[in-house]
Amino acid sequence: MNKEILNDWIRNIRNEDDRAELETVMSDDSVLNERFSSELEFGTGGLRGIVGIGTNCMNIYTVGCASKGIAAYMRAHGMEKVAISYDSRRKSRLFAETAARIFAGRGIRVVIVRELMPTPYLSFLTRQEQCGMGVMITASHNPAAYNGYKVYNSNGCQITDAAAAEVAQFIGKESYFGEENLSFDEYVRQEMICFAAEETEEKYLQGIRNIVGKTDLSGLKIAYSALNGTGYRLVPELLEGAGAEVILTELQCVPDENFTTCPYPNPEKREALALGIKTAEENGCDLLIATDPDADRVGIAVRCGDSYIPFTGNEVGLLLLQYLLEERKGRGENTSRLLVIKTIVTTNLAEKIAAEYGAGVINVLTGFKYIGEQIGLLEAKGEVDRFLLGFEESYGYLLGMQVRDKDALVASLAICKMEAEYRTQGKNLKDVLESIYIKYGRLTNTLLSYTFEGAEGHIKIETIMSRLRGQPPKEICGKEVVRCVDYMVSENTGLPKSNVLQFDLGNGESVVIRPSGTEPNLKIYLALTGGTKEMKEYFDGRIGSNC
Image (cartoon, rainbow, N blue to C red; front, side):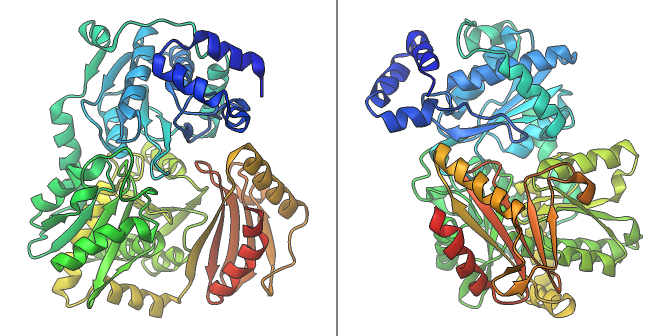
């Protein structure tokens, strides 16, 4: 721990609550070291960390420093306007207003939402207002203690590697303290900060309706959970507007920074869906829709008899892909021109379905920003009509061109439309998914996630990756490794460098290992035709023992 930095914070913090928190942690060397041993690292995901006082936490000082650097970056590139939105998390509004004051104080005009709004809306707002950049205060689906700061370019896409590296350099030249700004209200009076127009929200929703197309959800009963986040108002409005009966999971359809009923508000986790499934069971709903706190991811549970089965992100992506291709084919379109864009850890069955219709697949690194980047390249070539679907296994989907990030709102409407139309054919989504497996083969995709907290945990993750990279295994759980792909070597992949290792086991099976970019986790993606339980036990014994 750098005591000079700590003393700087002691000298400069004047807010009484912040001083009280700092004084509390001063008596615990381990907590103090954790908070001040390093700085939050700015990357393509922006900033993300636990809310608290310290250089390694999310607070008004780290948010302010990042905003100063981004403002300097914007001025260096001739950008004059930024869009800002925020979610339901702890201090999100405070962080959004802190950033707005910094930007305004440095001559950058700000358009900010009046109330918490979804991440995809921020992408839309950035494009609609022709802003140079956008900022979203959110930690997405992280546990309640976290918050974050996502940064978007003028296309409404999260910034990718080169821009993030340059922004980080500008941030590195700034300090946490030493800049006094006017109040938020004063900047509003000066018109350096203005609120997003009410009609912008309706443009966004109408755009979603146009993308999904004519939708009749009458007769469909849907349970909905916002997981205490930003979808609580807009998702029901979309679904009810299309004729559905929407039953709210009431305790989770109000913003709650503590996420009392779902401490880990991630729709990938069955426990996060438990209350929504209970709502569906009690009301005899056809489907559960659950969006994460910033409403960019969506999970579903499908009624099968008297029970509700959660579907994985891969399964929903496959269903949407086949449905959309079949819909386009039914309209007489040439499906061979269409493209689906997915991440390298997303199911390879997508290639098989696309090939059936002659459509193409573009594989990108993990992170929806890379999908958004490819959409931008299509737009630059005048080929926007080729984009069909972007999706990733972690429950992120995008249809249409109006935003450049995953969008749980457009996905929710499309999923419900798909469910309604299959119902008219006497099928449910489970039936359709089973027919996909029968036709294309059953490949089970499973995510294993191992948590390593703190600075020591970061070192453990890097040690594991270094060992695997230096001495790649010849077999994994009795399966021969036929090929090892190291994504740190761009010449082997044609993609930017990334800390990812892929071990191919033949027969389409693979194991992909990577550190999470937003959580203190090591993630292992299994794609297997069988033996998933044994493979999990294998990694639990080798990786889990290091947790």
